[in-house]
Image (cartoon, rainbow, N blue to C red):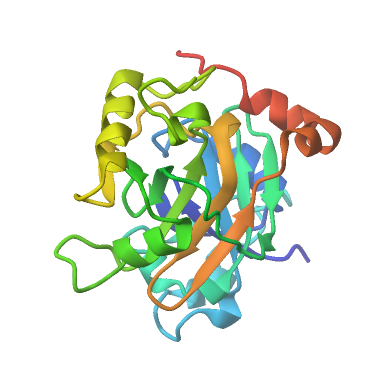
Length: 261
């Protein structure tokens, strides 16, 4: 009998039961449905044994997530679409899957987290429960703690985000080389970074209210992060050499420009 898996989708936020393996689910979710707002998909596999009792209608899974009459697997059964991330403990999150616009899936495992004390500035793309782009002087762990701090007037209970490369802008936003960075409105990004690095003000500033250009896979630096005030997990993104050697099809797809229909 085909096992049923639980997936936490981030684009859009949802807890989904499926009889599909992660790679098949990623392909189906990215190109076989139009319910999410962007071409890419990002999702975690979830351990149901570590979910809070009674938080989600898991009793529906054995009744609704069953094979069809022709034997084909049930692709998706939605169990929740509202405030899902905040109700799933970080400990319940397994592998993270990154899906390109044409449905190719890359799996990331948790890895030890280490600080980067020599970095002057960081750029973060948030995915859930909000999705702006933010420049910050804070390391990923400190950034996570700050944005989930309940004593602050603006905060979220839990956050998933990635770090993006700044090339030469991380040290010199005015004159530093940006190379092929794909971010919109680079002049504005330079201004925001320059203002942050002056010091004496905020440690984080908004760059974009909402990222509408999809996921910047090709400029991921470090990896992906998920956490709150108590828990924190890091998912290392492979180096380019590793991607080219072991995940070439995914990497080539991830670098392809968006195609409008």
